Image 1 (cartoon, rainbow, N blue to C red):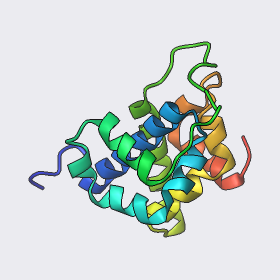
Image 2 (cartoon, one colour):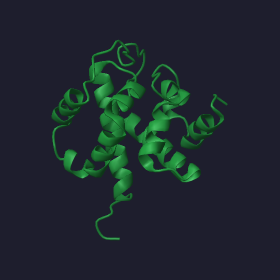
Image 3 (tube, rainbow, N blue to C red):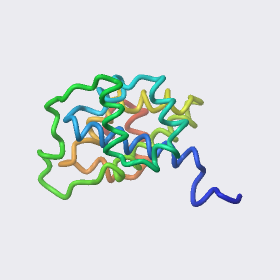
Image 4 (cartoon, rainbow, N blue to C red):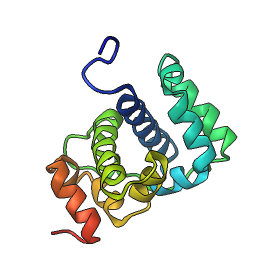
Length: 153
């Protein structure tokens, strides 16, 4: 299909929103679940729908607009500062979440934003965001199975 690139457009839009969530979380030192819940379903749907537009803008500027709009406060969760190893980029982590969300959406027949909210509010989110562990670079299917079983396997 012309214009699709290596993956479907909506998968790339999901990748962008996940990268943005991580960027905002790092910038404000918050858990990803807090960011997702503060943004709320309506804003998340807007970001997802307009991801190709936001992607053209500076991510720092976009993040500031959503931080202000969603009244996101600074926290004390600093998984980047606590990392003793190579720190994955917000895009690296966005890719991990994108794959998980797609799998949840397909397996559970859920809307992508509902699946996103579930993924970030599940126990696996804190495991992915512990950069001193190996979870974020595990096989995507393993991460999904852990999510599904609600425990590390």
